[in-house]
Image 1 (cartoon, rainbow, N blue to C red):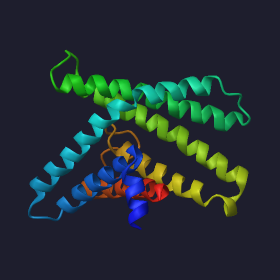
Image 2 (image 1 turned 45 degrees about the horizontal axis):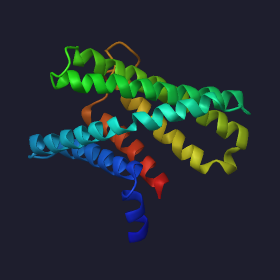
Image 3 (image 1 turned 90 degrees about the vertical axis):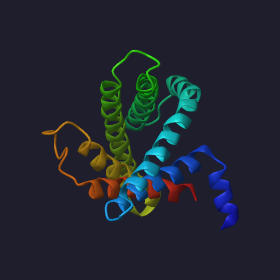
Length: 197
């Protein structure tokens, strides 16, 4: 167990999933805690730490885009969805970087507007990922797709929570409570963490 934990925490993905899980656990716990403000402040620090660490992903995301463009697709649907996910997340990374810099008053841009675009891009990537997972499950058959089903549950949970962050009047935007939204995000985080083990 300790070896697996050390292996997971030694990777960027592992640390990111642990910190993300912790952040949403704190948000969920805060809703019924007398120390609500302190827990939410700690959750905010966790989210801020993840944001900073994501800034080191840009080179690897650009490289992934290059590799996809030179790959000969064997499954058009899988290729299209994978390309969309990678491309959108690459753009997301740069938009988020400018939002972060604008928030810190380093560049003269509207941080709020940029963060909203991040949400739109994130949801777009989630939709492409969900379509890809459904396609893989249908292609392989239910009995061979336990990992794909777990991934689909995680993506769908993030999608439900993500849509709640959109402007009101879009699907169920704004209709979930903080606890409900944090629960779906925590499920997605734990699914991602579980898959690393």
